[in-house]
Amino acid sequence: MKITQKQRIINYIREFGSITSLDAYKDLGITQLATRIKELKELGYEFETKWESSKNRYGEKVDFKRYYLADMIAENMQHIPRV
Picture 1 (cartoon, one colour):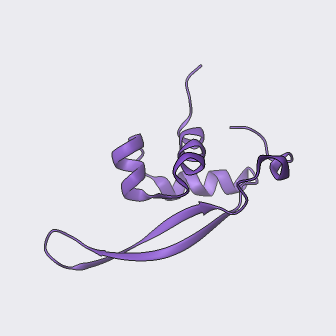
Picture 2: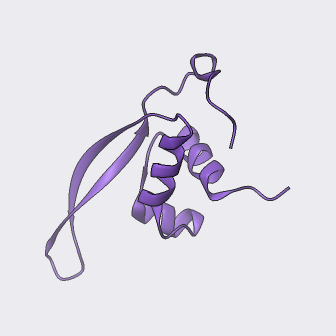
């Protein structure tokens, strides 16, 4: 059975605690993280986000979101379907 991008994202957050679009691209090959997060929200997952800043290769400030699962305790997520 092929693992979906949504499941990869959930697994990644469970393993590493959070994910950014750069993490999704580099580690998972996912280019549209915000779209997958939106789909996961529609399935009942709840996320918290934090804005972060960094500098690009030209020294310019770039802002991006870091996504966290609002509740990573599995027994409190029984109502949420597995993806």
